[in-house]
Amino acid sequence: MSKEILSGEPLKLDLACGQRKTPGFKGVDKIAVEGVDIVHDLEVFPWPFEDESVDEVICTHYVEHADNLIKFMDELYRILKKSAKATISAPYYSSLRAWQDPTHKRSISEMSFLYFNKEWRENNKLSHYDIHCDFDFSYGYILHPSWMTRSEEARNFAITHYINVVTDIQVTLTKR
Image (cartoon, rainbow, N blue to C red; front, side, top):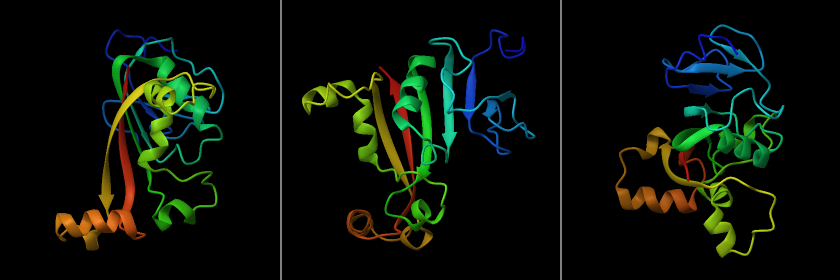
């Protein structure tokens, strides 16, 4: 890793940034394009970061492509400092955006992240799963523009019962 990256400043990573790196973050991607500071394939473990060395992570539209989401989440957990946050955005499972891209390997919902909370796994008798991370999380939705001005009651009903209401989900994970 370069001295610039180890400069003592907070280490904030934009994982799988491509050419859309978030300002103030170090871009990580497997292809050396403009904006990528660290060239690394996120499917190759371990990632080139020390345990508990990362202050914050952003990951936009990658987890639906990951070959092994469990390994990805465990590695994310390994590199984050205690109480550090990771913000993950992905197409929502009930949106055509989740299914239109043939490189997507899974759909993502808020329920997907329950498995990455140790207490939830224990309460649901899933401690035998080979998952080691332990995150708390919160989430929000990006709605299709046609639903933005509807009443909260109508939106909540539609989110549960209709397709293409939510286009993306944004999840904030906090390392426990």
